[in-house]
Length: 136
Image (cartoon, rainbow, N blue to C red):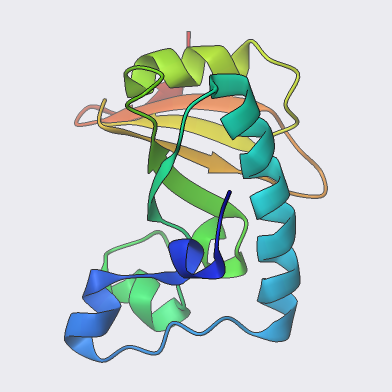
């Protein structure tokens, strides 16, 4: 259900002329991330809208991403799934599932950040204007 374009498309990159082409290593990681996102889509039973996937280091800097962002390695995706529910409902469903995610973050109540890694921590967080805290 996912294309490479969905994971690499960026309006910021297009506007600023930033090359957001993933390396062969990142492409392999994106394939694993897409596999994880397929599990999320099956869990939610509705189409997913990706707002941010892979970010080259230059793009990550341009959007104000964290210097250690998993977006730069192809491990992270920001998304919504209106056909399922709110971002908070999505995080609750993922956290209560058996999906082996690394991080699942409710960001500003507006979208879900999920990452996948070879050593999944199953870390659930909320990030908002007050900072970051464990998801309860």
